[in-house]
Length: 194
Image (tube, rainbow, N blue to C red; front, top):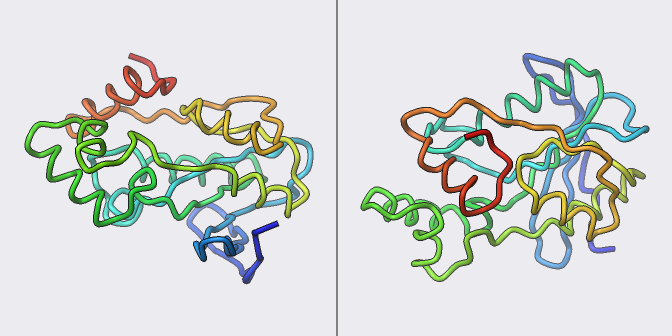
């Protein structure tokens, strides 16, 4: 297994006191987090959340990431157990600098897929196999996955994790992200209401 546990600590938030565990993928030295609450047996609620500095920390309205992260924390707190795997896969896996380059291209009229592709990337460069390893290291073999993205379901199943249910995590569109959400629904297969 290429996952190594680095440290575990308390993470108090406005909604609950979570535990936060840092993992290292020893194959590439990337560090990922598991933010968990309560007992994680009987198909816990799981959100796989890819790092989005602009949305999660800088409150960008260009995407739905920050809103989804907050919704996941609140939902898990209300349920009393569950976890978020916070992946070091900024910009759907292209990195922070390239994501800002993609934003610049979007400001000039390209959509999110066209911008990534014009920079030489796939529309989505993320890999979810490490999530399977993190879950296995936590003795979790089946989850209820909070996602709108079928690729996350496929990625978990391919890594040996049973997805017993999909829980929608849809946020309201705004003038700033409605085109982005439309591209995700129309061209990337995300399960979003129109």
